Amino acid sequence: MSPLIQYHATVLGTPDPQAAARFYANLLGWELGDDEREWATVLNPAGGPKLSFQFEEDFERPVWPERPGKQQMMMHLDLLVDDLEKAAAHAKECGARRADHQPQDDVLVFFDPDGHPFCLFEN
Image 1 (cartoon, one colour):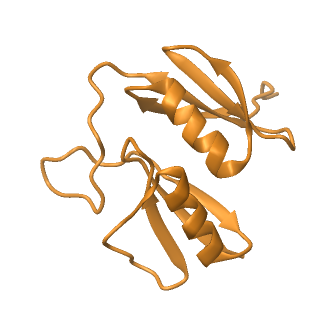
Image 2: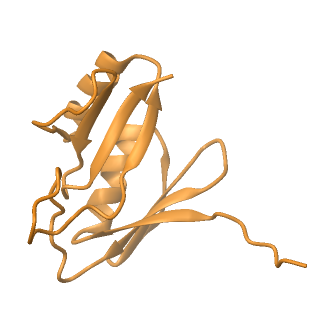
């Protein structure tokens, strides 16, 4: 019999967990949870997994698209939106930067202030 294993959170490394948490709380409309210098979280108001941020002293911004010899993204967030253009404008207002390289017409790639990529897409 397998042990009970539940998905609890996604954790992103960052040089400033509190700033990262505030960015995503604003972007997603979620609430702040833990708010410490080395660990911060945002809580999904619908329940379910949360998004956490862990301090990394030697953080290196990821590069996307990948380039040999550079820090690759280890993961990215896919965010479902109801209006792609309005969501893109909101992301920019929150401090995100739109990626120069956009591989698909129906998905927009952005970077959070730490350089982690995330994708906005409509259902």
